[in-house]
Image (cartoon, rainbow, N blue to C red; front, top):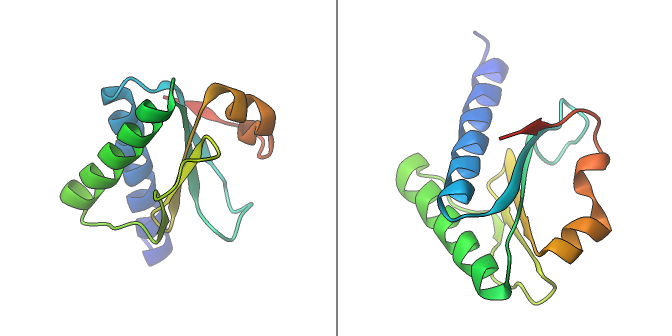
Length: 119
């Protein structure tokens, strides 16, 4: 397996772990979105919905903590502010988008890149 394939497989495993963490904290409609080379910023998006501002913050904190403990990966950016109903956790090859329902409906990130995989 090439180094690139190994990197992609690690990124996919991290994205799947983020989906599991979102499910652990009762996030709604978690989606794993492979970007398939259509983005230079990441290989995978994870998108999930929180049902309130406190849930959004708890979800972000939980995912960030679990990824740091289990995968030894820290966020590059994000997680500090949810004032707009959207928290982004940037783990490099995986970017997690946590949103309130109205924000997710408004931006519809899933529709920006073709096929998607539901967790």
